[in-house]
Amino acid sequence: MHWDGGAWPGHKETGGGNAGEVPARRGLPVNEGDPIPDELAARLGAPPDVSRRALEAFAVETFRAGRLTQPEVCQLLGIGTRGELDGFLKAHGLFEDYTLADLEQEREDLRRLGF
Image (cartoon, rainbow, N blue to C red):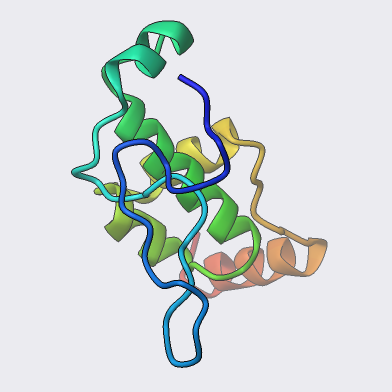
């Protein structure tokens, strides 16, 4: 299948560029319900969990850009514990900033609590 620069195959062009019209959106649709075409999935060897992987990639990139907080990543991905979140973030090369001052504060808090 070859793309000729017009509407994506199987999708209608919207807007003709006239004043007041919304121009056509170029690119693949990104909706959870939009399946990957069989031909493309077969060529790329798309796994059955491709939607989950795409959602995780989105979460990683938006977290890295500072547009999602840790609790929002948990909510988006259904992560239930801090340990799971830490594992997920570390698996994607994202490490929490933890300074010597943070360590000292935690040590002081533990001393105050009698530990």
